Image (cartoon, rainbow, N blue to C red; front, side, top):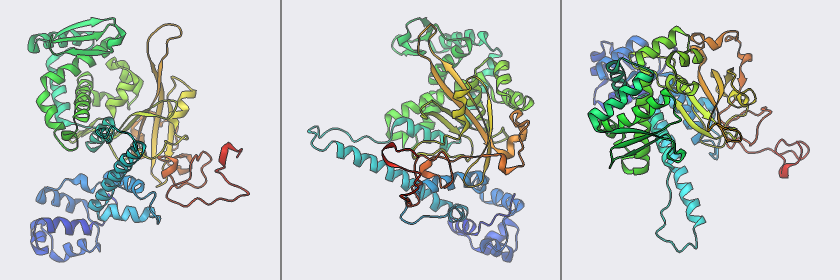
Length: 470
């Protein structure tokens, strides 16, 4: 643990509990003078003292983690990106370090401001519309649910443990697990499973009136298990799922709540296919080799990557990964983070990121050392995946899957072989997106950094109007 000064946070914790400095010092087994030095940032907070605070006050140690702090800094940078006066990164880091509550409030106000701006734009577009009863749209449900999963660091412990227990009860896998789930749905919940070749029905459709679950005949064994387990979660663990989504803003937003329930049911299905303990043990022994894990458990590349991003059980954590799925146009359809990496909400993503290079080399895993503007380095691996109907001329869905982690975890991954992890110059400089990236010398910059006034030289300008040659 680096030298960490958290005097403001300590004073706040003490004030919340109505304790004097002497009383807290006695509770922690410290001298009053030593505690006073900690609160005045004259001495750093050490691990033994942090553990005493945890045991005495019941404080979550995660509040003091560097990952949580980095996540907060990233959110604050976006919040002040268009401020009248630029805020330097060291100032944001200090605020997140000493006053995290203030930082979280700033991020929350920024998000509320974005939502209000969207409402104003929508109202402006509807001026003159005689449908006065037309509702002003809020944040899209998928955005609300994405934030919900992000707030939980993409890990739901009780859901995970319930799925793992069910996998142990089944004691089978592969095609045999399909038959076991079909039998359990019918025997315990009176749900009958049918297969259909009608493509319009999608992968899964449940008719509650007839108690019938229809599955597409095109699904493979692992896909059948996933869809069956999703439906089982919705009927067998409805109370657990409902309790998890009974929180703001989901509890007041029916579409978002329904989408969150499906997301948690999908989480359950992935945890049943890839039980936590067994999957983590295999991942560690294979040095997180995605292809070998997929071969061992009979699932695809994307499924393995998605599950790896959820392995954050408190007593047995795996590598904290971030997971992303993008298309050729740069649209991010999935993004989950178990740690501090922050995906931009403003503008597009960085074209120097290897998730886009993967489209030029389909099917091949591409590793990349990447460095963010704040100096943090990451190891990313990316590869394309394709799905869709068979047959000549049938359109296919092609995505690039990215899986990344902080460089300090890179030695645990097989993909670090041959990379110079100790050379800062070996990392590609990337950012969260042009509008929130302050790099001035980036050859791929598409927009100016919105936190700094645009300096235009009529003789030499990177940003030229009307598509003029650069």
